[in-house]
Amino acid sequence: MFPTTKGHLMKFLISTLGGLQMLGGIAVLITAASSIHEILGAVAFGLGVICLALGAVIDRLESLLPKSEQKSRKVPPVATIEMPTMNERGWSSQ
Image (cartoon, rainbow, N blue to C red):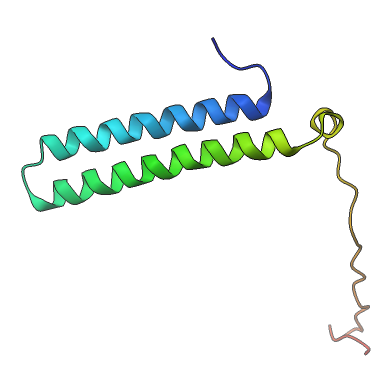
C-alpha cells in the first residue's frame, strides 16, 4: 500500500495531504456562513493545489537522479570558508 523509497513516500504523503486539504477547502466553501469562511475555503483549496504540485515536483526530481545517486546521497563540500583571525579587540587584522 505504501511506497518503499523515501522520495515516493514523501510524494505520496504530500499529495495525500494536499488532496485532504483541497477536500477540506471545498467543505468549508460549501458550508460557508460568511465571507471569511469563503476566503478560508479558497485559501485552503489553493494551498492543497500547491501541495499536489509539490508532490509532482518531488516525483520529477526523484526520477531525474541517477540510480547510483539515489542510493548514496553524500555530497562533498563545494568550498571551505576561511575565517579571518581576530585581534584582542575583536577586529580583523586585514
